[in-house]
Image 1 (cartoon, rainbow, N blue to C red):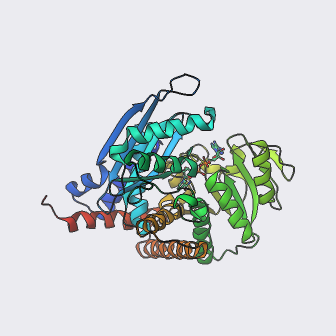
Image 2 (image 1 turned 180 degrees about the horizontal axis):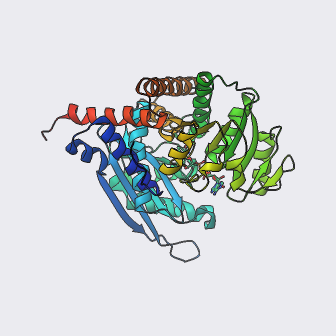
Image 3 (image 1 turned 180 degrees about the vertical axis):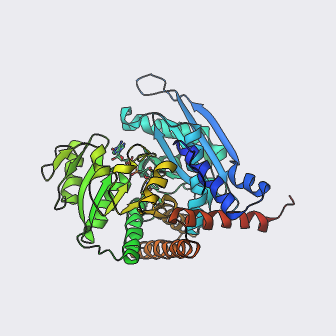
Length: 421
Ligand code: NAD
């Protein structure tokens, strides 16, 4: 058995996963290098002038990891700590995610190194437009198509689209430059909810296979942003009990199940889950360790490490976040037969619906919510089954099976394209 030696950054975890997969699949050295090394890593900076006369200075990053199967796809992360390595690791994960979920995209990601919590709306708009102009040559329907990620949202995507059409002097750009836009600007209905609802679709598929009933299932959720809050609402709709929820400021717990809709209202009113009248405040860390059937880590990367993995008591971990488990934590939990739905499968609903938005915009089509939800739920379920079938047949974990399928497809794409220019 291979020894675990990746210590925990998102890039280290991503590299570890792909190197292990290349070894399992017996890929030759040239192919292994082609699937591992990023196609392009851009680090730049923008200095937009704010309305009060201050100048903001922000480092920005764009990484196209691999575009063998199509244009690079992946969100823009705006946080105080994001750096080129984090964006590279996330871009690599996007290559496997788009491949696994079967959409004609590659993997990419962008970053803007600033804490958006300290920006007024108009300041953020100016920054997002400066970012768009600064990296314009790296954006495009056939190059890299961004979407929201931590710290960015559909409003920001609307500003990116406007900035691009403004620069060409047209009402709209030709083709899809960005997904996750407001519906009024050609966004697809249900994109905002897609990742969280997709997470729940994979949990439902896992419950079928593991003979667990959705009704009464005890669920803990780390992170109550876009992914965590939608997943919590969607799983509660199916009769599960969401017993613990955390966000960056604290956590709340109620053993019989929190009223998730009221919790959303509480967060809208107060800015955090702490102090919710329908639950008791507990520590953020405790949410990962409560006794439950399903744990949904839906905050940042490396939330579960060698240090706390031994205290996680969930039967199923559904990776709503990207890379929430470090490789040593993964090994500890696998050793205890925890059923892990890996990130590239579990949270791929967002990029699948982004693909629907891309096709809708390219064809000037309009999709209904029912159509989007039906296609999302079908794709999540069939992909879960493909991964589960391989995991059973090859006696491997769900993560290994998912990576094997995803990486094989990219390797096949490299061969199919051929070697000549
Ligand atoms: P978000 O910014 O909307 O929400 C993040 C949430 O995590 C917030 O509630 C924040 O308070 C909370 N949080 C931060 N640090 C925490 C901590 N230490 N403990 C507990 N909670 C903490 O982000 P999001 O869009 O929901 O994304 C969450 C994760 O899902 C990220 O890893 C992202 O890369 C991944 N993801 C998002 C999408 C998408 O469509 N939004 C798609 C795929 C993967």
